[in-house]
Image (cartoon, rainbow, N blue to C red; front, side):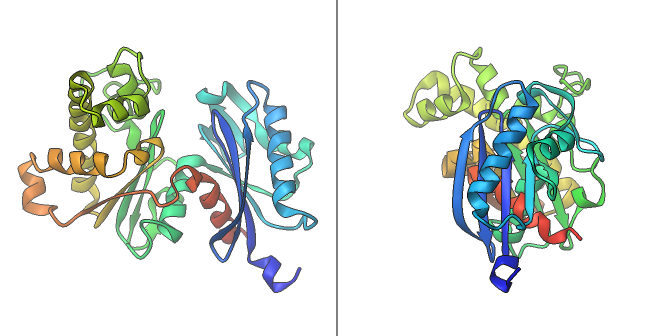
Length: 296
């Protein structure tokens, strides 16, 4: 393997709708591929991942491959992912049956956080919080240049901190979880599931009174969770990734306005930077590729 090839890495992100792949060299994206996520059957998903990796690698089958996936992933690569319809799927075995032999598997929010920290919006910020806000909420915390999620896979489940002591029951079994109130899915449910989060944001930006009211309520819930993160970790920056990051400055300006209603924010955290992800929808794939740098 020549020196240029050694710097190249492949990352694949398995989402509920699409599978995205990237080819990186020196942390820059050289190529992109994608395909719809096959529904229901893990073997077909594994085959699709293998085909995307082959398209990116060309004739060189020795490139490091990192694969990001939603859901819970145990130490053996067994995945439970509600948005994929998987319950305790041995995905490592499925990938090997599809033809992949050398790869690493990562949880998607963790991979996305590493993309932003190593090469994106949080680069050169030793203390930072990353929130991946989509159907649910995932995240990571970086302190002194170290990833807390890397130290313990059970840490930084920020979507499952309670922001309402006796609130709605979450799929995890707890009540009042952050993601039950501040995920993109939660925003959609505020409309009675009549509209997607993206549609609500668009209509709120256009001045629709009902959607603006929903948006203000949503921002209030988001601010409570973000404020908790600020108090717990005192970061210099908070980065919003996932689908909600596409709302850009409309989201960040509203969030800061809500945070400024907390006296403690004004006393201690006025200098904190609120950012949206640099890699947006590609963060999971980019992060999976970058994390292979840590593999032996």
